[in-house]
Length: 51
Image 1 (cartoon, rainbow, N blue to C red):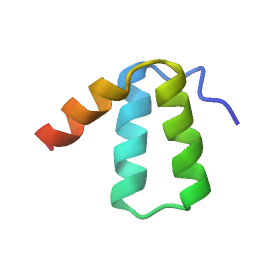
Image 2 (tube, rainbow, N blue to C red):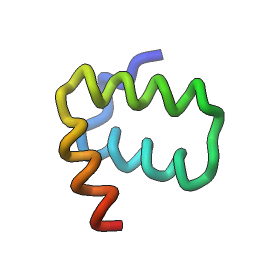
Image 3 (tube, rainbow, N blue to C red):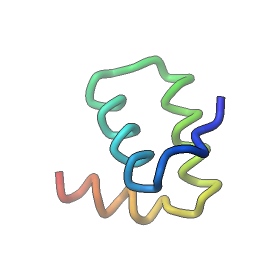
């Protein structure tokens, strides 16, 4: 499954919501892999620190 239709912000929001809800670890890994592939991991960290 790829997440190409999601914007960077939507992808990060999806990851954070899935993490908070303790969604399946393999799904979280797929989201995180896409975040890393897009080179927006720093944005994820900034966003998670603001929450």
